[in-house]
Length: 183
Figure 1 (cartoon, rainbow, N blue to C red):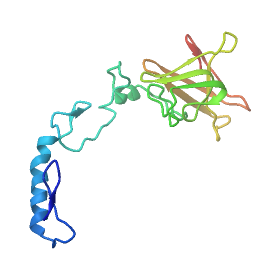
Figure 2: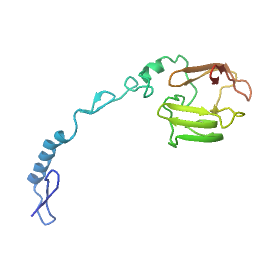
Figure 3: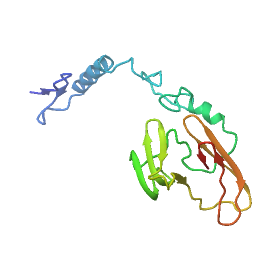
Figure 4: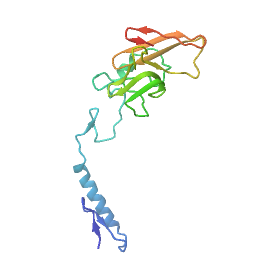
């Protein structure tokens, strides 16, 4: 005598029962009939229905929770190629999944080291100093930085694009001062 599953009443033959393809087919028919009733057809992801496979592109994903600009639009504003890894601070790669990093030139979000207190949240990355005498900094090291060639770095925050173009000569790189910080 077979057993039945509690939710769909699918037939579960016992080890003593002979294999019967009709039992299997009836079970599949029950699943096929019940599945559309139990899976919500009104759910969406980025306003696309989940009734079929969904492919999300930069046209579908907002920069942040409070900025309606899409990643595609924001990235199209960038005119220079970028040498930085993990440069989009509105939604950074953060494999350690920590919400805060603190220390003196310690590794934080992927490919970056920082001085100060680094906070990673829904709205992106923010930096604050540990004390008044030590401002917060981000630093990214490059293994093969082209000496003597002009390069451009850009950094995208939730509402600003920062870019710096220059030539590295010798050991030191280059920086540029903005109203709200230095790159």
